[in-house]
Image 1 (cartoon, rainbow, N blue to C red):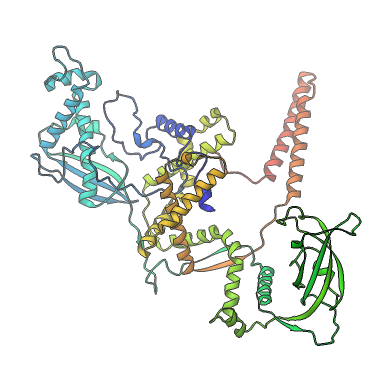
Image 2: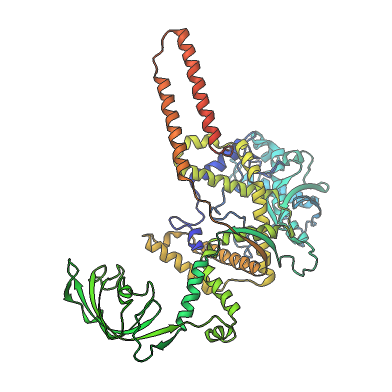
Amino acid sequence: HNILQSVPRSKPMFQISQMALAACLALSALRADAFTASAPRLHHAASSAGQIAIPSHLAVPGAASSLLPSSPSPPSSSSSSRSPRLFSTTDNSSSSPSSSTLERLPNSSVRLTLRIPPASTSAAYAKTLAAIAKQLSIPGFRKGAKIPPAVIENAWSRNGGKNAIKTMAINELCSELIGPALKEEFDLEPIGQPALVTPADVLAEGMTPGEGEFEVVVQCDVWPDIRWKEMEGKEKPYAGLTGKYRRKPFDQARFDAALRDLAERYARLEPYDDGEVRPLAMGDACVVNMTGYLANPDGSKGEPLPDAASGDNVEVILGTGRYMEGLVEGLVGGTVGQVKTVSVRFPDALRNKELAGKQAVFDVEILSASRRILPELTDEFADQVRPGLTVETLKEELRKAVDSQDAQEYVPARNEALGKALAEVMEVEVPETLVTNQAREKYALMMTDMRDNGMADEEIKKLISPENFDKYKELSREGIVRDFKISMAVDEIARLEGISVPAYQIEEQIQALKDQARKEGQNPEEMGDEEAMRRKVESTLERRMVYDFLAENAQLEVEYAEEEKFDEALLEKLAQESLEREQQQQQLEQQPQEEEGESGKEDSAGVDIVAESATAVVEEVEPQEEPV
């Protein structure tokens, strides 16, 4: 059921509204670093001076249905869609490979220093010149002709000239060298956009292509490693987690009824002694012949019922709720040989719709009667239910079965307790890029929710600013960091414990989603990317399996408490008082103005009354979070 709720059906998965997309793009346009770290970002210098290019990584990713960031996608093994790398750190090309050193920084960030040989800077500058030449139309040179570098540099002067071209070459070098250096040399997975410590246009002033070693320093967040804390006496730190959560009390009445019903199934019959005339009582059993009639409006016998509604040698156990209303009550007190006339009412949910809900009259002849002797709850009885059971293990299994439905309702609370405990036994440095990206997604979704709830686009646009995003990010930081740490730990536990979802379970859930869509009149083909849906379903099921594994090995304290009931009377009272204040304010606003001086005094008094009313409202209503 949770999976059915977690995957959107009315529109393609991971789709986000245009308003949410506009929210993020508007912020990035207002301030280039609104969604990024403060260090200068790599960007193409081909844009005009003074303009801010919006990098592609600022586009809102579509993981709108997940509140946790996903792992970076592994690099594709196919290179057919990518141009060959010209400046490799490891190849045997004619240009000397660059060397690099790495410095670890807090929050899973690194500072990478690249030392690029002259041949590579020369090749990068030549490649950039060739790319620019294709865009230019220079008198005296036909298209495709080789143009001298000085001519290209002169033609590019209005775009920044030679320094702008060198800036582009530096960006080209960085895009070719940074990723491979991190992945191949240091086995690190970069996150987000690397940032030059010194801006590319400043570096360009000191670079002479083909002359001397050129040094570039970049800072980048990388995918963090998880470190488990050493827990005394525990081989696995995540085993035996402790914590507590609240849930409603165990349904003892339902347990007692289930235990009694189980005993009823193993009851033995003991016929009355010969010649004993004993009225039937609740709990007894009897064998009867039954002849039925539809009831007339006055309660008398009408037309005979079909044979299927009557019967001979029918065993009846006198117990509450077993049969149609009135039958058991009409037999109580009867004796063997007696014919009792019993008025009954057929259930509304009866399969035979012609009889459902109808009144009927039965002539019931009591043929025999027996006492029903319930077994005592002993180990012998438990072993009879299933070999090897004791009365205690029987009660424990029955208790779990009875409570399974209620317990399922509180699985989120249980998982939250497990997550908090899990966060205490592991350490992860959460990169700022992940915090920013996740805050960006949640901020965009909040804008979408506001629009869905009826807020006008103009009002939403007023909320979209770097300052508001920064506030929202700081308010959300603690939760984002906690959720990411827990998410990463759960994924790691699945790997360590070999927990995986069987393929058939994934297929069953996918089919259930499609069936549900059809029931709601939707086309399953419009549910979006099925492969993305499959990954979402698999991830949800896997995490559920991990939490169940942790719960089985945890020592959670369950606090049983009755659910707090909502005080409707208090709400009604507050609403009425608020309405009275509003009416009072309207009356004050409608009062005719008299002389200017007196009017001023009256207005002042009116404002005082309204202010007092507003203050009273604020004091009675729980304060809300500051809007962002």
